[in-house]
Image 1 (tube, rainbow, N blue to C red):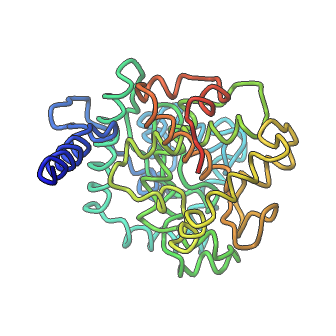
Image 2: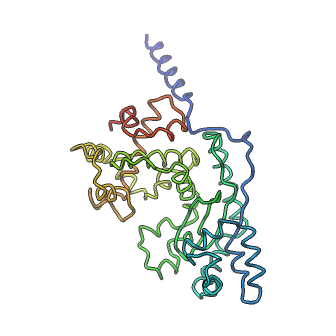
Image 3: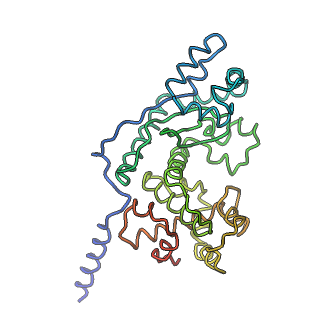
Length: 337
């Protein structure tokens, strides 16, 4: 009798260990066009008063509409057609602090490190192509300086990285800007790909649903983080969420209470935007709950809901990302910590 029990237990464990991981895919045979890398910061800092017209035209030709978007985002609203374009651009590239930052970027992100980033990003694109074969892929990876304005974005088929936002938490530039520690803690090279993938996915699967309940936002971001995990399967949740190990421990230890907060008083179906912002925006903590509660806690809760949904339902990642009914995902998730 005991032998049968042992055999049964071994069978169960073997069967469980052989269950396929929906995120564990083989990308070795996936062929996609290679991502092109462009280093805009290097091209811009070639410009001077003497060669301005020639180099400017070369940049406009190489970068196309992206360059206009880049300029209008933070430097000169009218882009290259603005009467102040030349003067503003030269002021930017000749600014003492900006040039010092550029020199630091060149040291921190040499060609070898950028090539590794390109390789890792290409792997993400292969996984994306596997899960979403009908969707268009980015065609280029553009690195740049943004004057410390934005970190990562996806626009005009380009994955964009502002390298001046990833110089490490002890960077003198972040001290100069008086950036809070909860932000600078993750302004390093390890955060580039998670930030880049997350920004890309948010743009790709834009939350255009007019419903503005807390549930809608919670599930939407849960889907984004789950999809990011699919593209970066070896990246820990803490890095994807930009949480410290202490914050992750808080979430695990208080999961039941956190869920209770979201579920009580029909709070999930509340469309109070002030509450939504408190639970989804950046900060040192989530003040609506406690000073120990990590920021953006709705995103962590949403990820747990989506993980449960994917575990308990036979659906693909594409099915998940195209499902707009947040209540359906919640109900079918059977999430009960």
